[in-house]
Length: 217
Image (cartoon, rainbow, N blue to C red; front, side):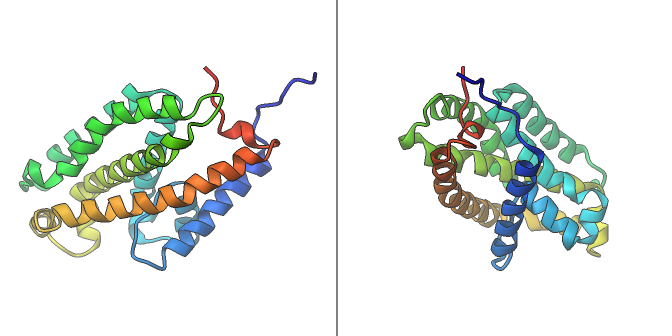
């Protein structure tokens, strides 16, 4: 029996990135944030001033965190999120943002460990159909929150200057939008789960690429 080749062809990597770039373009019609390789490619096509500097790191770090959880590197993911939070509080600006206004970021950090447990239970030699949707939902939410953590840090360092407001004005925005922003990210995570779940089953149904989502022990 011929040995299965588990190396991802470069053309397949590009195709997958292109698909998610198209999804990002479609989702950009609504004012919803999105992360991942697709979002990065879309911003290369239509970059903002923040993206041209270090803004691409927010999406990259969100995607990277999800990848860490998928390859069982939960402690690195937790460390990354904690460092981002700490750096935000010591970033230049000398303004006070109450910790409660970032409650969703702390929640995301706490959810990283249970998310890693769900990933292990969901993606084995056979995908657990009952756990797939909640697993993708949780991963998407965590990834979006890490994206937001990195964005907070960049705004605390220099982002507020790019949009023509003071550090004090930016800090004042955290409290009134503390819950609305979290609700928006939860909504995006739900959209991601509804889109990704059937995509995973479609990939699984194709023997040539099904190994992309099968994780052996």
